[in-house]
Amino acid sequence: MSAPSHTPPFTVATVTIVGRGRVGRALAAACRAAEIAVTGPTVRGAVVPDADVILICVPDAEIAGVVVTLGATSALIGHVSGATPVVTSGVDFGMHPMQTFAGGEGPEAFRGIGCAVAGRSAGALQVATELAIRIGACPFPIDDEHRAGYHAAASLASNFVVTLLGAAEQVAGTSGLTETDARALLAPLVRSTVENWAERGPQDALTGPITRGDERTVERQRSAIAADAPTVLPLFDALAASTRSLAGKPGRRMKVVRTIAEVRAVTADARWAGLTIGLVPTMGALHEGHLSLIRQARADTGLVVVSLFVNPTQFAVDEDLDAYPRSEDGDAALAAAAGADILFAPPVKEIYPDGFETSIHVSGITEVLDGLHRGAAHFDGVATVVAKLLGIVSPDRAYFGQKDAQQVLVIRRLVRDLDIPVRIVACPIIREPDGLAMSSRNVYLDPASRLRATALSRALDAAQAAVVDSDTPAAIVLEAARGVLTDAGVEPEYLELRSVHDLAAQDTIGDGALLAVAAQVGRARLNDNRILEAH
Image (tube, rainbow, N blue to C red; front, side, top):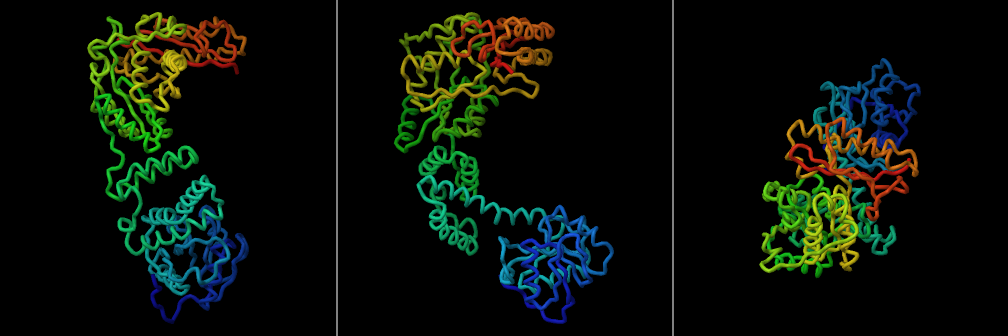
């Protein structure tokens, strides 16, 4: 970019600059080099002598205050803000040099750069244009309506690039490089990349594994960042998605598989590539609770497998197996959007082929709560299908929701006792804005039942509020919770205080206790829980 020519006569002979920051000092030097008489930079609030132009070089939030302090003046007043509109700031013109000022810059900093100009009048715009040209910049008009977008582009191209390079430096540091070495290594790459972009445009300048469609390499990079620089991971994911879009690549596309052999082939490839594997077992009818598990798996692991299987062995004969909500297409779309790589949606006979006769029973923690009220076969079905899924996928981590707290304990004991090499991750309960725990069975609730259903979470809140200290008796918290349920016309199937470790009955809060509740509300059997702690 080269500055356009501008020849005398000039209309601006004197300039006063308000603001002694980096931009103010650099502009003063540039104006003097252009043979403009300069006063300042002055401090904010100082007496400003008469001049043709007063340039305000202060933070945006202080511009209006400086204008008020200046009072009546014959000078044209301008600011150098990129974002602040001319009209609403009380100045006559705006003149924003698109340049970074780290300190110590002289007149050369303005030569050949872009400079956004705007004016309340044609005369004011002419003055802004003249000043830009005389300091060596290239003026281009940006009206107030588009000023914020222009300034956002400048932030992306400058401030955010520094943030990005800081992240690259951080990741490089995980390889053992010092900050100085990382900059020396990356700086030539950054310079050539910017030059390529300036000469060729973004599409033609783009290189790297995403452009080549090498998603395996991208996943290896992602796994390394997740392990060694996890704070950078959200930025990496966002940039990878934007880069795929720029490159015209579809990016991560979830694959739906239905056989054990297909899943094992995919996971074998992932292990060969050095990826960790996350499993999110579901029965479908996905909601935000399930999606939070998928997102956590996406953040933690390189390959995310979501199973979609309504397990018949965990339903009693009088339960809602046939009516259980199913929508594979909708679930697939949600899972893909949340970050799943594989949706394993097997038919029943793939999991339970003809002649299947094995069942797993976990003792000690399945005889109470849901195990008592839904029957022992419920958790036998859960343990058996989870053991099969863990055996099929062989994940490094498997993700479950804390809403089914007893199920989490059962699975942890299953994994411990059978020496299954997987980490069980329990994720927080996700609730509706009114506190109702999200559940696939919430679709059964009519409006009146939906309102009553909030009593479960309110009962848990009331119980926590009743806790005074670790010696608070179970009877006190149970009474508080039961009162809320009674007022709502909800009769609990169970409401019990249990150990968070082994579900043993607990007489006091101790160092923390699980308050679990289940109730039939309208057509839906709902459950909820909370770990109560002393204040």
